[in-house]
Image (cartoon, rainbow, N blue to C red; front, side):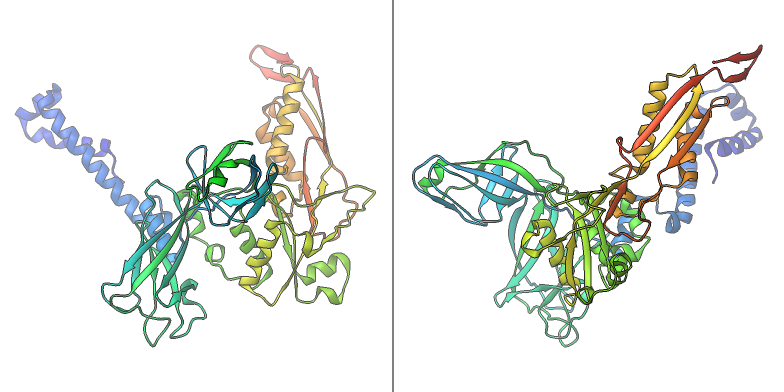
Length: 502
């Protein structure tokens, strides 16, 4: 790639052929210098664009290229709606029923839809669940019947993110079928796709080949759900009905009780750039164990812990059993932390408990439904995660020019950042700290350990049960870390002789 300096050098060499201009150029005449400098700048920019274009197919540095690549692969950026528990206080005498599907607004003007109905007696407090979304219905008239007809999904007017799409006509609902997989001719299905400008379309089939082809004049009803993704609400924040249906509803006071599921914003461009490189990551097929794990993790990204395993791993951990045949096993903890979790102690011997279906939380029920949609031949069984903090002892000696307490806090910070409860490895259930990795991270992250002849020793407590335990939630926390830092007059070679301690 040619730089601006390269072009300026060529200009300076060529100007000597014109004595009059050369004299003014050497004198720095702005009338000569300015337009030559502008040309050099513009040519350098063109050179840079050409250089980027040559490698863009491999590097994907431009956002437009990333979006086009994602569109080609069928990746649609969408938001995930938050779910919350609302408290309903009835200050009247008569009982009032709040039906599901009612639209309510929070104190910040965001739309919510009541998910579960609740009947609240006079003077009592009831509870219901709501989803943060705004459902919009749009009618689309088919202008011309053509194979693989596409109906554009309009963008939201308030900047909300696309969350879900439903399609219907006078004959009933269409089913969503990604990439027309397992579809036959005549089946009422639709497929969603996106272009390089992030326009989303509902695409239909071709008559006699696959799916159905809408006829001219058909009125399609598009039910579009938008959400604002990751949001926050304060405890006790008031809610109100968007429209009241009876005078009795005036006696109801709605307020935010707790967040059940955390909303998610669409994936960022930086993440999309890497995601598009690996088809196994964004394709939704779920046949093998790893894909079931990803299937759940992709649909529920806010889980604090998730481990999904099959019959083979289960029998390695707890022996063979006829009950394990054709089962998928799951241990999870949602963002709200409502699932039961055991703690690794000598008393319970780290034995997980199977959770009966009647005790499943809303998140566990949703996970079971997601797995069933992917493959309904499996039985889903839930186990309690077992917290298993990893005990690590760290002893360090540093120069007296450092404050021991500060060095200790920095060591703890580095350990928690790489092996803590919220790290990806811990949340996926395969945390296994290595001595080599710990030494490397501490020397890179703690300056005091690289100064002079500072010393460091690390000891990891031996796992009492090294067998395969897929439900174990292994991580490092402050309680499992034993860090001791001492200071000493460590010799540090400096100009003027060996200075001690600094």
